[in-house]
Length: 137
Ligand code: CMP
Figure: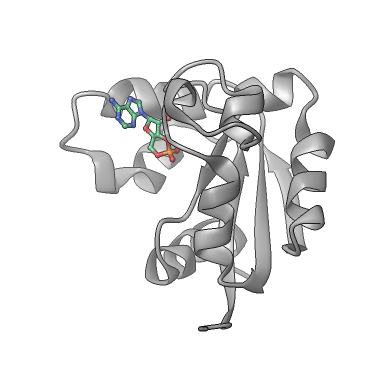
C-alpha cells in the first residue's frame, strides 16, 4: 500500500461557517488522522474567488460559484496526513450532497451543489497551488 504523507487544502464554505459547523467539520478531519497544520478565517472578494476557481472559468456555474465563495466568511485549512488528498475527498463525499454517501461531510451538512459546505483539493499538484494561494508567506 502507498502511504505517502501529503498536504491538501480544505475550505469550510460560507454555508457551513454561517451554521457554526466549523468545529464539527474539523473534528471529522482529526478523527480520521488528518492533522490541521494551519487555519485561518477570511472573507475573500469576488476577484479573489474568481482567481481561486479559475480552473472552472469555462463552466456555466462559474459566476455563481465565485459569487457564492465571496458571499461570506470562510475558513481555510492546510491538512496533513497519509494520502491526505484522497482521504479528504472521501470524507467530503460527492460534490452534490444528494449523491454523497452516508456519514460524509456533504451528506451530513451540505444543502445543495453550491452550498456543499466544503471544498478540497483534487490532486497533490492542485493542493500545492491552492495552499500557496491562501498561505503564501
Ligand atoms: P468545489 O469542490 O468547491 O469545486 C467547485 C464547485 O462548483 C463545487 O464544489 C460546487 O459547489 C460548485 N458547483 C456548482 N454547480 C456545479 C455543477 N453543476 N457541477 C459541479 N460543481 C458545481
